[in-house]
Length: 206
Image (cartoon, rainbow, N blue to C red; front, side, top):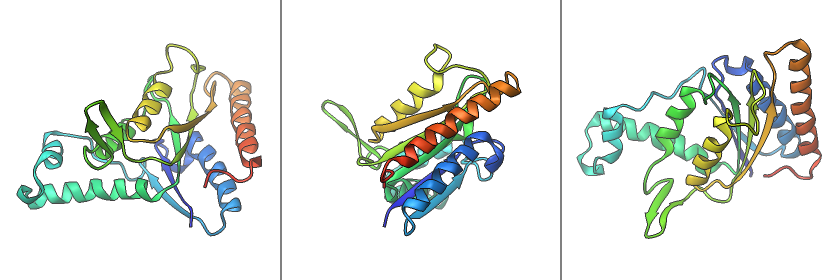
């Protein structure tokens, strides 16, 4: 059975434009994978705690020396990693806030970047362990930034996913959403058309 992990990162939860675009794609995936499993993690509704010294030390402490509080922190991280490991397809709804990714997504990344769990060190550098997956990123922006120096998201997200072993990453952009109504509708229409083209591919990555 195929499994898809949907990560919504909008502060507006399921009401964000990036979440709605992700939902459209997931609906098409469900139609092609009627027996598939969809795991939804909404970081707007249920944010991951930001990394602090205590949580970092929980990850770095030896398993047999962790306190009860540290074991709870690690168990929470393990649950996030477990969802990623189960999924063959990752769908990320990604709004742009002040030229960057949502802080809750950074917190999520900080909880899944675990040496020996999602990547390992080798003589030739780090090696990602979450291989064989396909990621779709639905990036919603108020302005038009793709392909410019102000697009800090695409490279960062692509590099992080590659770091943990997810190298097959496709971005779908909805831009110009805050310029005016015409620009908003054009940006959303372009993204929806891209989703329709992806849905026409038989089958979607599963």
